[in-house]
Length: 121
Length: 274
Figure 1: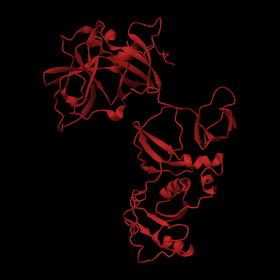
Figure 2 (figure 1 turned 45 degrees about the vertical axis):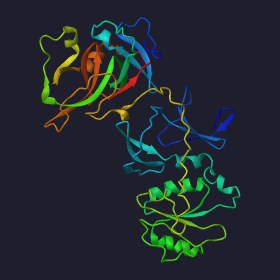
Figure 3 (figure 1 turned 45 degrees about the horizontal axis):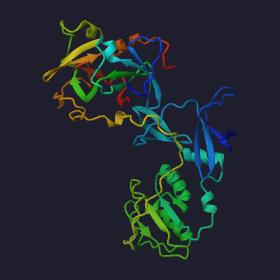
Figure 4 (figure 1 turned 30 degrees about the vertical axis):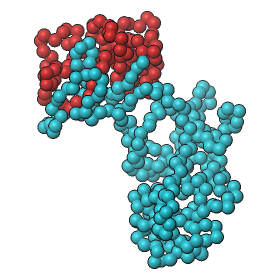
């Protein structure tokens, strides 16, 4: 767990805690827990991606950050039927890249678990 | 007035800001030379470090113009407008110190915005500043100030730097505007051996220290096609000219699966956490 991350007692397991991100206190969602995946055990500290939604800032804990891609909208395809159902709930389509499949994350649905009264308030 | 660190600090408020009578009020503190001034604001939102590119000039006193900061159109405050409201002699105090080598500068620029912005900076740096909006007016100012400012030396105001003949108090430098970078360029025509003098940076703002030094903001986002050395395999994607609507995604690896976060819908930035 990153040192600056402050756990929030009695929150759901998907909420990793709150973090000071560039001067703002943001609620951090553990994406692994959110997707139903086991905790990362290779010892590397997770990265947080800052996202703004409805005027509130959140952080999403991920394993590794990649590059920024520009992809054509008509390249986005529907969720494949064999997509893991836990991922399918949060996926907004997929893009086929060379040798890999990129799942588009629907951040609205990811953050639906955060109660309306923000933890970070 | 308010007490700030054992000193009295005058408060200045911008129009439209109301000072609360109870609770806490956010204030921006500017300090220089042992004196502080507080600028009252409604809310402190963020501290950013960005290249400032003021695109639209301001129409009100106290506003330099508008710029895009962190993806949002923001009005840039002219702090220099408010500082003298707290202490009338904020900019000129240094001038009052007797200085044998105080030099005179004639600042010529057709833009009032830059005249008003640069004149206080030069004054604060210890120069005696005179301003003129056009070449012709500058010439007349020279004449009135009894400087021998030869018309033959005073060529195209856009690109040249002209020096007048030496005077007892030191030669007067004329800095002419050529898209406001030439003002900083200091080689005298007669004296090329002398190194260029750079304008001192306006160092008036006091900023609290950044809380998260390890953060990388949106301004460090790699360009599409570039590779971030994070140990991920190079993702080759069609980043050449794509026909039709495109969306930008920040890619992230979670649990061995590659995910993409659409940028246009949300403001995303990647930061190290821990």
